[in-house]
Picture 1 (tube, one colour):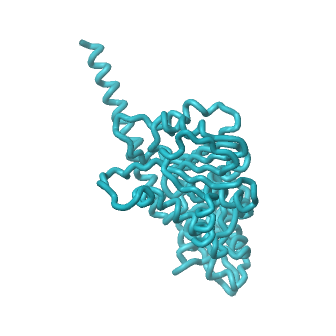
Picture 2 (cartoon, helix red, strand yellow):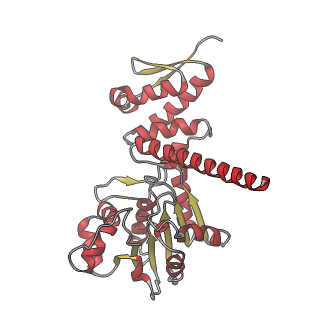
Picture 3 (tube, one colour):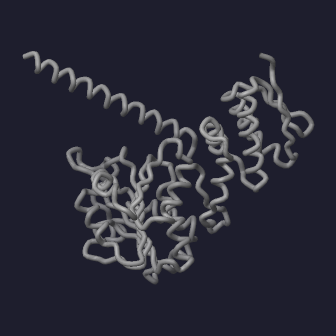
Length: 337
């Protein structure tokens, strides 16, 4: 079969964005689709097998269109466009890019970056209670915060309540100095960070002083009824079943709830059940409640994080298979006795 070539015109002002630092974006496309890409006088020529050239050219046209919208192309955009090319003929990146939730205090737009994130955001819009479950870096908490702040600014709710269980991440921190707020602040710092970035420190402080934004440990939710509020429970994998039931039964009229968690990073005692795991089994068939499962392909941090998540997923799956084989062998040996 002869070599096939396609030429794509690229506006000069978008050429550097498309190629990436040290041509990293182009090299990635060449490697994954087994094509050769060269720049000739404002046009990009893609050569190789006809099918591979077709896929590579489609990815590049998507990236050019993103650049023309003013987006700074990142490695994550390129990797995701390549990954989705084998699954869909539609312009997935452009479809996702159309959905702008809000802007940070510095004017940067906050948008879903993967189909999984887009489905998560759509579920939040359409359901009263949403569970966002997935590994680190998938934007579960950050997107939930963006949706909460947008609803608050649009007067759809009267306040924002952010909570998480105060459990150490696999290590004992000992007694923390200061008053009660100082003791719980380290556990809630990730929520503060997102609020500062999206809302701005001054606006956050002003609304917090008015009681319109509350950041508190989960234990503070007991005995309350939460009306007309946007409520986010973060790190839900570290709740007990009783805590999860307590939290979900606090919800009042006019409220929306987002529960986020990573089932692979529990800090509970080894023999303790997770409230998040139980909730998935108990509530999965109730109308008005949505469960969104994000995966390693939805990781939008440094690309190395995605590889780390996948490596751990593969390792844990292998350990589970080995455990099942050992249990099967033990049962077989008992049957012979």
